Image 1 (cartoon, rainbow, N blue to C red):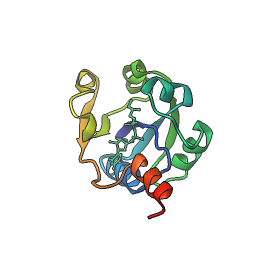
Image 2: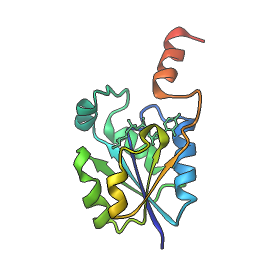
Image 3: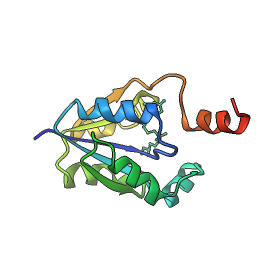
Image 4: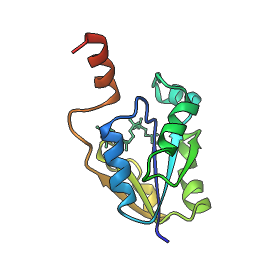
Length: 130
Ligand code: C2G
């Protein structure tokens, strides 16, 4: 069984998130998603609309996702890859190169980011009412 892992905040879940998870799952048989906790998002400088519990439950409900774990710190990735026996680490290509150190432990794949959608854009659209 080929196991995949990816990480993210997944706030205000949108089509870009869905396409990332869909393409990540297509690379293997089992997809683990590490969802950033509210505390870790503060470290990332991200203010979430939805709390961790809600973001994790929404991601867990996505048919491509097999398991959700919390992302507490930047440094947990090597342990996660080992603990979950991961074959492929996947991120959107806005992170290209940032996690190449994981190549010592698993395959690293950066998938093209979906254009013209982001959590920030969703918020702006709602605020501006258009
Ligand atoms: N993404 C995408 N297309 C978009 C928006 C996001 O492919 N239009 C991808 C991102 O590249 C990322 C995933 O969806 O792989 C989750 O995006 P975010 O929730 O913004 O995650 P981020 O804040 O980048 O957290 O340790 C890694 C971090 O936790 C990543």
